[in-house]
Image 1: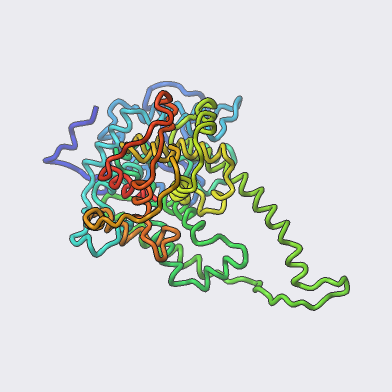
Image 2: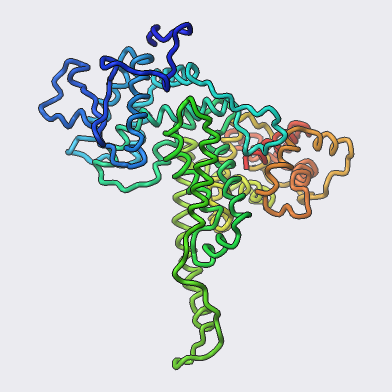
Length: 501
């Protein structure tokens, strides 16, 4: 139940609210957030006063502790008369402080989303954001901006809901990390499921932020190529790999919890990202690359000889690191999408699906952002590829796709026909669509093999000119039957799919 005192006629925005002493549910003391459970519930929680204290030792959050407490107090005062949030704090505090057992990271994340973010808490967060949202993010002339740079008011509300949720979570999350002596700097894994909770159907906010971050990093790379190339030569992260770190560390972990309703969050994101990238490119190296010569030393080896001798070791280490990274990323993708694949389903596709280069290319396009490029994707084993294929198929089906999921797991009958469609009427219809032109303007710089070919028309032509047969685990009686498609629907699905890359 939401308190009626904050009515439309007498509404107080959270950033304008000046609470009285009796309005405080939580308060801060240096790097502690204190919740007096005993007074709130009139119960004895033991003689140890530390049970009411949450340690906020992350500087990024302790510096923002006053704002965090204000948002929690506002939520409790106006939207949580039942004190459900405070009770959820009690539940997790008991789990964290239980010295008899050590709660592992995945178990704690599960507890957060099972015990803390209940349906009613989520509903109250929705209501608080709807009531307080007042910054118009819609651009008057959208043609002036790339799609990756555009944020609508719907996007803004989603981000504010996630921001409010992170503020509510900060006390228990920080206390958990402190109690485990964790030095994690990137808290993305703890926050990422909030995007699943608050994303409405048809919106993928984490993908939106990923594209936005990649756009900013790419723009910085184009203006500072020599600096980035020097880092690359000396073994630092590529700009594409760094974009993923920026998303997880800067955007999700650091910036989103700082959002306030009276500021333009897009402007804040832009300023923070530009400052971070400018600072990153100021670093100077003590060591510079040297010229390799063919002069032999006392052992009969030149610099070039030594360099060539190191190749096998480098390649071997890359292989080992790729294997570890592939397993880690696939597990992360499974958890994020909450998809479980049975051994029986996996073996069905391994037995009946003939892996085709065309489908593999589409799958790699989709997952490249998760693997920070194509190196690891090119080293996938068959069972790993099949897992990613099944996850993508189910994800597309959940989004309402009809034909593309079937084509991805289907078998090519005869030869793959890559001839580009010459039907002028069909081409004009595609090229005049809004989504096609958005892809032309914003996505082409992120797609591979795009130099002289129109990847959109080529992909559509290949699908429409090639015959595919059904390979469906949940529809095994139709195994081998032809997939009959409707061209207009397939065209729309391909455009939407490429827009997710």
